[in-house]
Image 1 (spheres, rainbow, N blue to C red):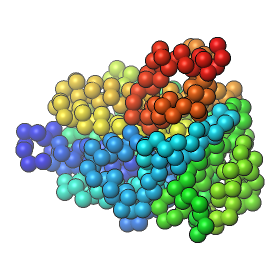
Image 2 (cartoon, rainbow, N blue to C red):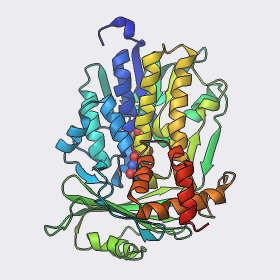
Image 3 (cartoon, helix red, strand yellow):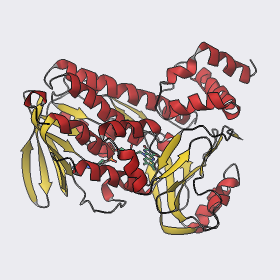
Image 4 (cartoon, rainbow, N blue to C red):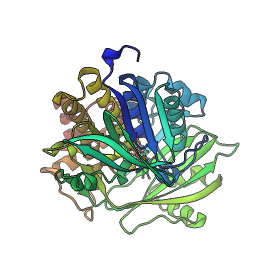
Length: 443
Ligand SMILES: Cc1cc2nc3c(=O)[nH]c(=O)nc-3n(C[C@H](O)[C@H](O)[C@H](O)COP(=O)(O)OP(=O)(O)OC[C@H]3O[C@@H](n4cnc5c(N)ncnc54)[C@H](O)[C@@H]3O)c2cc1C
């Protein structure tokens, strides 16, 4: 940005170059003369599953709300996803969903989504952010601490190999993901304890990449087989770049999908419908079967602290790390970055409204995602965490809604738009829709 009066500061610092850190850098770039992103992993030029983002070996869906948000931050990125091999599919026509014990109606909804591997999405976003003239990504630099003075974040201490150094910045974004030690660091620096909400979800995922054969009937086919509690097994598969399917099997509590090929196939055969296994049974497994265990879903309520530091923005999984079944994490990171952009658009970073606007926007989307993912987790009796008041009625309502959506294209579209974080969940509670849901439930 050339116009100095629009600047919010000389330099902004971002810890972490995952989806959240990259989206944040794109939001910060117009408002700071310089943006430095520190990433502990040594980043490669090619998409790869890396230590700092091991979840990249598992299925990742960029929801439509996330894609639209990225398009605001990095115009033209949709086309770049396509240029880099993203598979475009229709949420209704290509995406088959077996949910609540029956197949959803399969109908073209004109709701395209772009599917890639997570390393694939990240690489395209990183290339765009790297091309921003005032953004520098320092690969192989681990932030060891954020430093504070007079109640505000002022610098980061980082390690580049053996060398330790400190960089100062006017605004600091923590995008170190679910492993961020920010709550511990804040307490150590004399700030209050960060209130947290935790659900003991105990989920395990095992995923592999399978080459689609030459006889593949619909290379754009994606499929979700989601069980009804207490059944623990589920499966998701989707096409990704390079003519592959990414296949993920999930299990709850002690039910853990195996990482050997035969065991993986056996587990897939035990899903509620044979169709899932049939999609990839004749395809060649390329690369390893990877396992990821997620014991908890966590929400850190930085916004509820009375003395949260000024000039510090937590963003992405650093705030909320949820059950990925609904594929919301990357989209949340992008929507948090949009909330940051809205705050930067309107306020100087030292105005109280700056942090308020950011947290209000970020918490609204985190809350919506948390509610959706949490509601399905809490259906399982073993999951620890507080059930909201009226939870049983909520469960009934969502069961009725699914039944209705399975056979009604308009309801399915509304439900999908809410899932894709394009519209608020409140739209599912209109009196007219509520009456139809009650009818579907036979009451
Ligand atoms: C099995 C599984 C499947 C998922 N599926 C989906 C899906 O379908 N759709 C979806 O949207 N989301 C999905 N998610 C969630 C998604 O991966 C995350 O929500 C999202 O990637 C969050 O991005 P982030 O940038 O906040 O965190 P991360 O991706 O964890 O990135 C944090 C970054 O910070 C770096 N870092 C950490 N510590 C430091 C440090 N001290 N100094 C410097 N750098 C540091 C890390 O190396 C990493 O690059 C899934 C997650 C799992 C586990």
